[in-house]
Length: 330
Image (cartoon, rainbow, N blue to C red; front, side, top):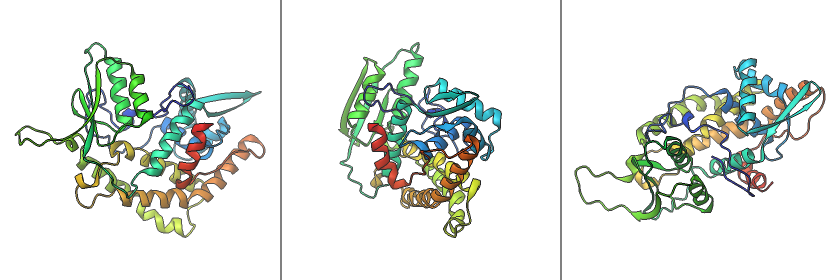
């Protein structure tokens, strides 16, 4: 989700409906993982190797690298064009050759996302037992504003306890408060309180705003998909296009988890919650493939550009935090 920085207008590089397809209705059900969109893959690919320096990439290289992930040339070009129209990428042309890079607004948003990914599954659980509640009321005819608010709340880690009452276990920081204010609706109240169980038959615990069973299934599917690859990664057997494809796909899947499980308090979760194991697996894949993937991306870019190309660097999980901080200030 976009985080305004230095007065730069907010841009959402990803579509919340990739994660929650029923954002209009406030559904608690996250989308089952069934492949990534070309636009989502393109943003992930570009950010993985250029975010910190906001480097340019030849459009031919972006198309070629997406092709190695099974995206057709036509679909890849369409994805890049649409991302440029949405303000996620900006283009530059030299004769017959064009290149693209992240816009400042998209880089700021992705930098904030990198911070969340780096912090996700941190072992400390210092929840104070309070909930942040956002109550709002919008007329049915203001569907666009309702949709924008619900999407913004999802990116911020809130979930719908009731139609007009969304909850989060975390206190909103300055950036989150600014984003809520930017939605610009008057009929909204934000407050923090503790849940009081009065024993009502129809009462709801705030944690039920999240479908924990569905999230657990997504964690299990992630582990089933990626843990078997770890021995080959550790032995150095995954390289070239395979390394780039795997690294892009693991990030494109993992980036959704801080939204569907926004560091929910451990004491409220079922025993054996897989968040920590998923994070360890992600880091092992993402970092373990960094060198091989970087080498291949540089080779593809050099081939498409007709010579060496500066600014291509694979970021590690640890660098997502420090690099994201630098990108957000850039």
